[in-house]
Length: 360
Image 1 (cartoon, rainbow, N blue to C red):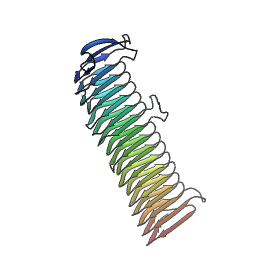
Image 2: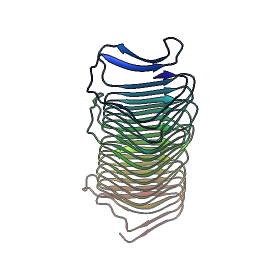
Image 3: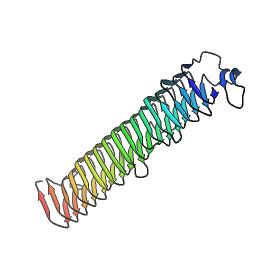
Image 4: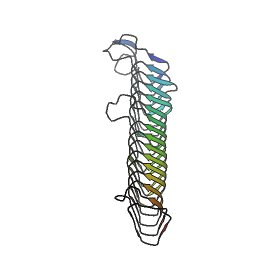
C-alpha cells in the first residue's frame, strides 16, 4: 500500500498463492491510484505499507514473509505486528504494541519518541536507531540486540538467546548506546556493552552474560553483574553497585567507587580518583586498589594484594598464594588501620601517618 496516510487492521499474507503476483493500493504521485494486481519477480509473501505524506496506523498485521511499514510522521499499532521474515518500521514517531519476527526487527525513528508496550521478539537480530526518547517493555533476540540513540533509553529487559543465525560470527550480544540508560534486566548469551555518552547515567538492575561486559558513563549504578568472562566499569563520577561475579579479570574505574561484593576467578583492578569502598572482595588472582581519597573494605586474594591511598586506609586484607607470591603491601598518605590481615610471604607498609594492625 502506497498512500498519503494509512489506517489498516487485520492484514494477512499466507504465502499459499503464486509468488509472481502482487496486490497493491496506490495514491502516490508516480503510479495509477487504487487497487491493482501486477506481475513481479518472486520475492516472498510480504506486506509493504508506505505513508509518504502522513502517518500509518496499522493495528494488526501478519505477513508470511516480510512486513515493512514506512511513514512520514507517525507509525502506530494497537495490536500485534507479526512476520515470518523480517519486520521493519520507520517513521518520525513510533508507538507500538508488540512485534514478533521470524528473522530481524528493525526500528528507525526521527526526532520523535519510540515506545513499545509489549515484547519485541526476533528470531535473529533486533536493531533500533532513534533520536528521541526510547521506552521499551522487553527485547528478545535469537542473536544480537543493538539500540543506538534515545534520550533517555528505558528498557524493562533485554535477552539475547544465542538461538538465531549469527551472521557476524561474534556470538549473541547486547549493545546499548544512549545519553542515559535505564534497564532492569539483561541476559546476554555472550557479551554486554552499555555506553552512556555525554556524561550520562547507566542504571542497571540485574545483568548476566556468558562472555565479557563493558559499561561506561558519567555515573553507573547496578544491582548485580554476573559474567562468564571478565570486564570493566568506567565512570567519570561514581560507581555504586551491589555485586559483581566474573570468570575473568575485573576493572573498575571512577572518581568514587562503592560496591557491596566482588568475586572473580582472575584479578581485580580498582582505580578510584577519590574514595574506594568494597565491602567484600574475594578474588582468585591479584588485587590492586588505588584511591585518591580514603580506602576501606575487606579484601581476600589468591595472590598478591596492593592497597594504595593518598589519604587513609581502613581495611582488612588477606593475601593468598605461596611464599613466592603471597604479598600484602599498603601505601597511604595518611593513617593506616589493618584488621585481621595476613600474607604468606611479605607484609609491608608505608603509612604517611599513624599505623595500626589488629588481629591476623
